[in-house]
Image (cartoon, rainbow, N blue to C red; front, side):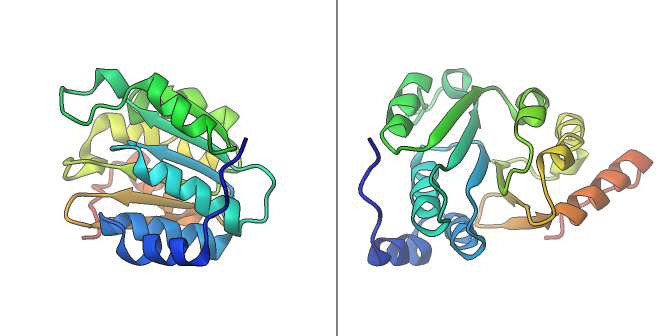
Length: 190
């Protein structure tokens, strides 16, 4: 059973005041582009995923929203906010979306899901405290699988601490991949 749709006021509140501000960027992109197929790597406390699904349900016009969340879940380093896989399943089941949770890191999970997630509209990658992600060998190898998941209007958002972010479209992802394959040093834009 799906939850009651969000109101315009609820969307406004989330899209203007959510913390961190990167969440606002994702919610606005979902509404503007009517995204209905979402992949999120690094779920944090699990708040952003629910909001993204609910905004997509309201503004995409699609009957079903497809959401995939990739996280280490119980394998995360110990913290007060460790997500439990079973708890996230329960939370997402109540939203009425076609939700899938994949335990693992960006590198291993992306390789496993790439072929089953063709034509994904939005991929969000929470890079945590990792500074130069493109210098990381695991990140670079996982990046090679992204183009097969995307279509011409897809977006990939990399979220960093301190509300820093980078947004890539399909052509940007392929350009970064060419640079990685040719051995050119790829740096963050920030």
